[in-house]
Length: 379
Ligand SMILES: [Zn+2]
Image 1 (spheres, helix red, strand yellow):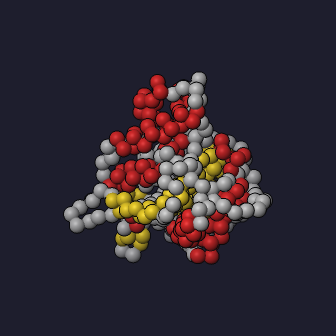
Image 2 (cartoon, rainbow, N blue to C red; image 1 turned 45 degrees about the horizontal axis):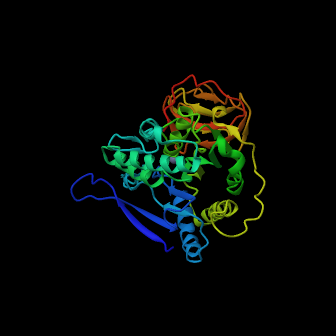
Image 3 (cartoon, protein in one colour; image 1 turned 90 degrees about the vertical axis):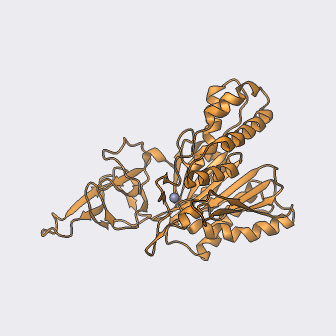
């Protein structure tokens, strides 16, 4: 099947202004498995754009050779609204400037709507149920009345991905090592992805609730399985958020290595032809997201880190000092912030200026932690 290029227009935010998504489709449209890749949903997180760009030519060649099993959808930049958020030389892209929040939150939970519609149509035939659930999910997205430009973007991205078998959401951190948010129910089967991407932190998490983009397709299946326990309903699709190092770790050299890792993953799971060989050894032990400590600034000031991304930290270690530059006494000027977790410092904020309540560093840990004492502002 020949490669197909589509343009998906978004709501015009004003006369004379138009934005659109560019969508590449490879393989046999409508066949299975269906994979979806997009990058830069947080529009200031660019590493994934080069990874997907690196893969486009490979996918075209594999498609021409008939070496793709199923359908592969690629959206190299998922957020043209955020790409335009350039203010006085600074590019923002995490939040909608028109007030519609974080671009990776507020994807509607469609599980109840789907369940109300198809509950009676579900039986003991899992393949039949899968087809019914996918179709109802697509229809539920179509029926969502999405007001505002950011919501029409959310709706367009959901329409492309809600019925997929695999969803890859490519992000990055401010400054970070390579890490991944991995659906805990798929770890055994697909954990080689983290090894292929040379991840040094794997955060296992449940995919049955939340409003992130990568959760939207999975909550439907989880909740239908709970609501109709006597019907044959398949496992939720495999959806993951890849955190591809830091915002400045953008370049063709890193992108090529990561693209090759994704390619070998697809080969190993029968999506593209070729022998990937054995996966490399995983460089870390998977840890629960609930064991990750999110360090929060108790006061305003200038950050002075004591550890770098990738460093091992013990619980009780001071990870950073928040400095009041005007305080005369050197020691008194510094407010130390300690880690509650023992593990790897896998990400930290790029800006060195913090305000009270701001999250600025994350450390993976093995043990579940109680909620943070301070309210977390997730900038
Ligand atoms: Zn992000």
